[in-house]
Image 1 (spheres, rainbow, N blue to C red):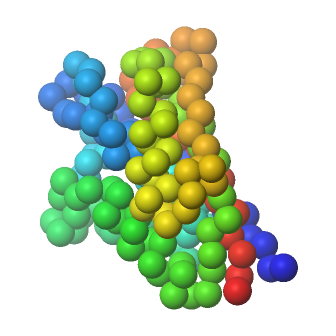
Image 2 (cartoon, one colour):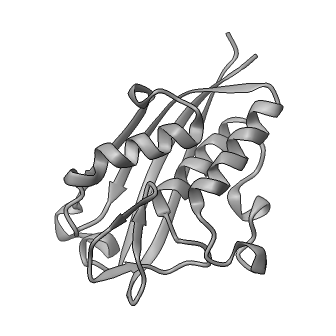
Length: 159
């Protein structure tokens, strides 16, 4: 077996007047995340983990934030393109594990749908995608509510 592990990390500022989209789920909240695309910080971290495991760069290289083609882009569409590229390079995704760092809102009611959306985008069974969340007990920029961050790990196998 030729297994490859990749780690992804992304952060977005919390702002008024934007939708909060995590794992393709539009979460009802008074604030959202700032970004060039839909700012789905969860999908972004996963894409970087997948690309990192395959040593194929990062999402900033593939989908630059100064390219108008990606303004408001659906991150799950971008994720499907990342998956297509890594599969074309001979890799299969084994599993994905994530942790969302956010003081608010409570994400438990949405985690199952996030998992399903991400599994669908990656062509995986839902059992191969984990979404966890923590508040960080009010510490740091995520704890103060200034931003959200996500750590993601992906395991790939070279076929």
